[in-house]
Image (cartoon, rainbow, N blue to C red):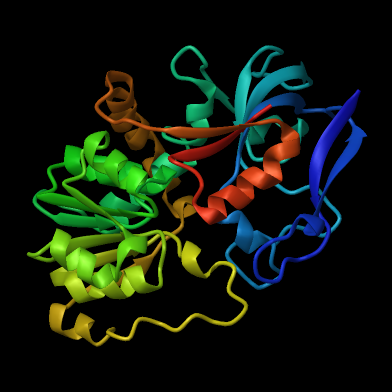
Length: 332
């Protein structure tokens, strides 16, 4: 049996190029003692993966050259040498970018395909959902009545941030996105109070028009001009949670910082970065609160699904371009 997997051949400079990667055929691995063999059904591609393609020091080790990359995946156990996980069980794990994965059972989390579609465990009920929940409620210290601005708001994390804020009693939720179609989605389906296409004019001007009374919380997925605009609209005691800065991930030179940081003195504002890995203690609370919202339809989600392991790289590049609405998923 053949297993196809994506290897990183060279570290991208600027935008990743197809020649930096290779789809390699290998034998299907044999699980060892205490391991399971999983046939992956859905793979996750996420912006943070771009950072792991670089050798620069970061919060997580870079992908190794000439070896298979990693990412979130959910699949069916087809062989088991471990207690507690049987053939036919479905598990969530971190050995994506491949069709089959052999891993220690302790690194596999059983999921129930009857409770929710398998793909949701990579998105709305998975890492991206917890990222939105922890970043908004813990890092940004959201409280009822806050006005919230979310960049990259039509993405997997951003769309959930805005909806959670509304469900928790935000006074106003504003989102930015990269197309008029996504702006319409934010307002008409996700319930944002206002949204704008950042390609249609200066972000600072569009944000002031959408939030004339300022903002109390900014959830940053983009960085750059969005961060500067948010600082300019921040109310006294405002908080900024930095989740990602996709606008600078492919830069070959350091991006200039916001020019108006001094305004934080006036507003007593706070900027704090966060990683979801530091907040897994919130997982039970997250599932308990968000699960019923998803089940009832109170919290809506979208997925952009790409078919086939051979298209995994293109799906990832699509995330960097902003092609996706909601979570980008690769279906095998």
